[in-house]
Image (cartoon, rainbow, N blue to C red; front, side, top):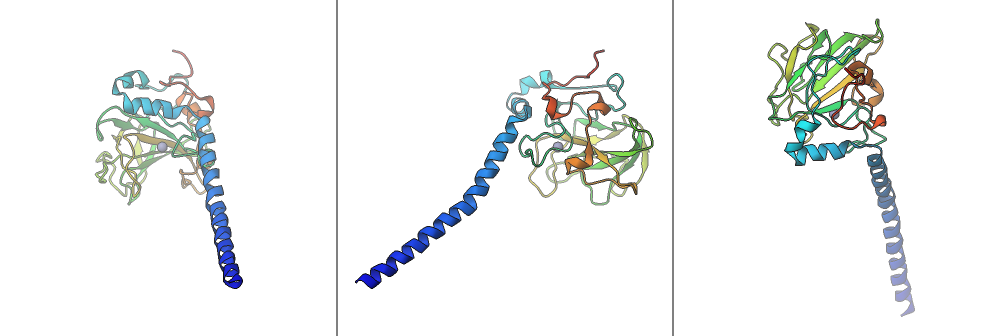
Length: 250
Ligand SMILES: [Zn+2]
């Protein structure tokens, strides 16, 4: 009967339109996201080195940056040793060009809880009450005296949240003076509620609000390029080869 056929055809058309619209609604953002990530990975060389580091432990000694003293002419001491994996403003996964990495990731060669992390510069250390794996140090900016900046150190705990931070700095520590090179704790794999990360230290230099508190360091705009502070090419725009060395030759 024509009437029934007509209704069936209309239902079919309605269904097909729905599928098409639904496909666009999911497909266009998905394609955009995939394209953004593919484009982002072309702007960085970091994943090549991280893959080599993870897959081939015998490559690690050749990829490691280690410093006992600041680079010539630079104020900060490298806070831990290992592969300088993700760099500042790095769009390597899980980041991308719209959400860049705010610091440097130093991947140590060893077990969690064994690779020392030290203060990059003298200042006043705080560890908030809930902080399992992080400390932050307030400094008078050596490159811009009179300005307050902060250095932030995180992932210093086990997968289960056993802290590797030195006993001198329990949760609730406020404004405790530390010298450059003071042991803060050890590299770990803890990342809060998110899934554990590979063993590394995340280190960033964080801007201050005018009232003297630190800004949210997960936003790269709230952080500073660590290159001039450490005297090393740590901005991903320069795509440095690893191991990273001091800018100035010794
Ligand atoms: Zn990081």
